[in-house]
Image 1 (cartoon, rainbow over the protein chains, first blue to last red):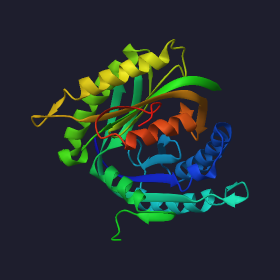
Image 2 (cartoon, one colour; image 1 turned 135 degrees about the vertical axis):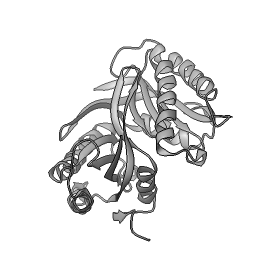
Image 3 (cartoon, chains in turn yellow, brown; image 1 turned 180 degrees about the vertical axis):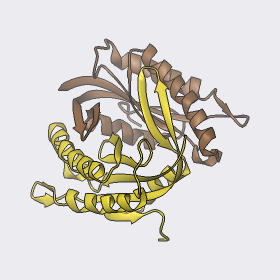
Image 4 (tube, each protein chain N blue to C red; image 1 turned 60 degrees about the vertical axis):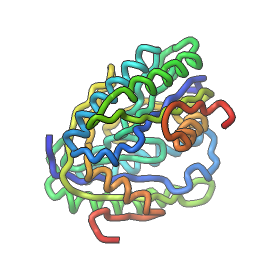
Length: 145
Length: 145
């Protein structure tokens, strides 16, 4: 279905350089995902996918989120603030957050026994590309660079 | 938990350049995901995540898959063959497939209401990095380049 929605992508900057072993990585990701999920859900959004050090979240895609444009921006700022207060080996984490709004397809996929509902389309790609141009902090994919 | 496992990452080469609209993209992804899932499940693997034009699958992570090293290689070759026979606008798709084996953490994550079980660690990262060096066909992350 076609929806007007907002999307957030996050990425931990320099994550591999932290040199954590696998168990420590899982522990850190649990804390990071938890902080991001709290921010997203408190602003009415939904976690779509956890992808290593990245998270995809959407607003107004699978449930109504009035003022999703405004709420997603407030959420992005809060993620940047709260994640960068997490300390690893005495250093603060650095996170890049990209946010954008527009129309996209909200689609259900059944691949073998795997089932998911996700957001697809140019709006989502645009925010994903914006993330690559963001080293830390928040980038708004809808604003000229 | 620590497991000896195999991982496959796939990526559609030149996907954005196909210039498909969002609805056509969903239709294509359904076909692509279906082909990949059939290959993965017929070799005893599990789809972990669908990520736009990419798929992450694992073998021997969440259920026993004897000979996962061998089966994951056979699966990777079959994905490359079958996906590249899908035609879009008269042209065959091009897919890159990276495969690798090793130890990794299999971990359950609960982020807000989002729940997933996924594979984390150096082995998974290594296969993901190998994918970036593969334009089309199969790359084995465990063999010297």
